[in-house]
Length: 400
Image 1 (cartoon, rainbow, N blue to C red):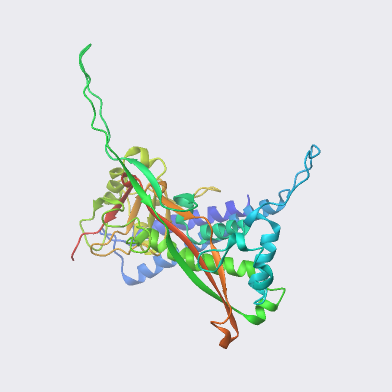
Image 2 (spheres, rainbow, N blue to C red):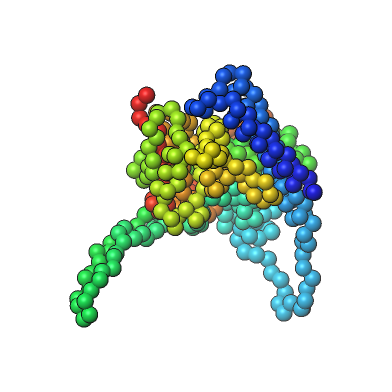
């Protein structure tokens, strides 16, 4: 048995013990005394620890597989034409001059001409193409919605997305009878480009140290800061200088179920939420909620006494809720009066429009008094729910 399989088996055994404990000590309303609650929460913590360890082992396994893969292929034929350097921001010359500019405050005068092709409107320079892919990959790791939603790339201007505003219908007609026309109508959604930026400070001593990996440092900090702000906007954004989020009152997910209580939801209400979504969207649907909401969900059972939450016991098999995968985000609202703590649907209904060309501007003088150099990193993007019927949310009862 592999190490990961063994860990999954142990986690499954822990979950069985936790279920048995909950069945034995919880009353008919699912409540336990303080001592039993503390014991159950320790069991949950152990289960979560195993889950995190399994994720780490699987990531390490994937990484080892990637590192062991061949990095090049043997030439099977002779090139007919000599290889030429790539143009613009894809060229080795641009990349070399760009990072020279980042490290050396006086390099601007020597690399200015080479970087002209990548100058942005605010005095910064567009990052090399290869490094832009690095930034996007780092963002996907920090902002999980980027891997769930549909991401499109735009070069400039607004992106118009045509939509069917109403659906036609068919009618039964007599032979040679007149076929009635359907009132089909069409609309469109516009995705623009909101600006998000951060200033990353680095000491001059570190920049002069050739061992310091400035590329990785900027990518990590950019992803951590921007990824978190993106995820918050993709969920709760109001559209004012930022994207319209999934929970927007008018342009976000429609309410599939409203809980009867302001402080708790039931297993039946979760089941109703699933079936409030049209069947075609349920094929690729998943849940999104806060970690605190997950704790409440783990205690819920269906009418047959089976827990709604189930751990993944096989390699590559995720934990599920009512048979569907789920993700967590601390930007999702907590359970509370009038809140929308649970989303369910096909997240490819939410589109993220990435404007190509992230840029970096070196700020030489702004932090000179503290011996630091600032790097202003900017990107532009927009996002919104394109297919509103593809997402539903569970809303809590308003008031107490």
